[in-house]
Length: 193
Image 1: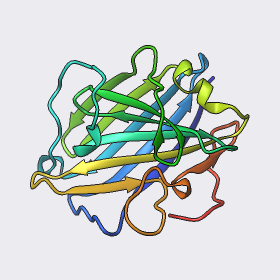
Image 2: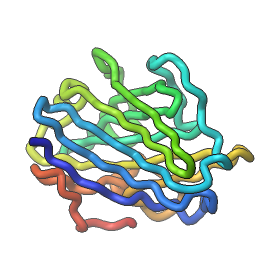
Image 3: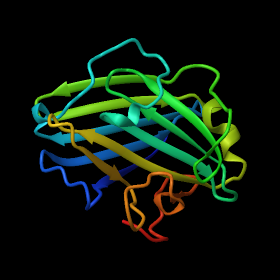
Image 4: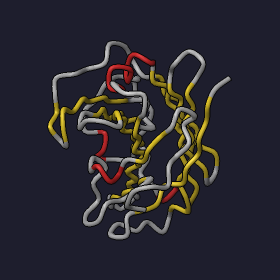
């Protein structure tokens, strides 16, 4: 039996995107220890710049176009991991020792992603093997930051997140993370939206 939570992402007020009505993320811890993520974007998808399908390889700088992201960190300590998923099928993963201090960690293996589009709805499903985030855990409690970058057909980017810290969009900021208990229920404590 998997454990599941669902959350709505909000657009950063400095980057409004009227073509997107909503983005919702569902996170499920599977019986095999893997983490399944489903992002659903609703809106006028023909007005968005969606990367075309490519081989599902590791690629840097996916955040420069439409992509979906998850950040995972232990409740204690500053280290965390970032995972990016493009509708193209490409993906990326990074380790950080502290806020925006990248380390040499690279995952051993591949993330599996599936992208679907139907009218005004886009779905991106990703699965992370347990080994990708197990060592990032380090404590029984985890924190999670869910986010998305959406590029419209004019090239403008909007930034969506579970929580936005004050100031400019910053998915790495500690206030972007929400507490996750053993049942993957999102906590309402802390600051941000």
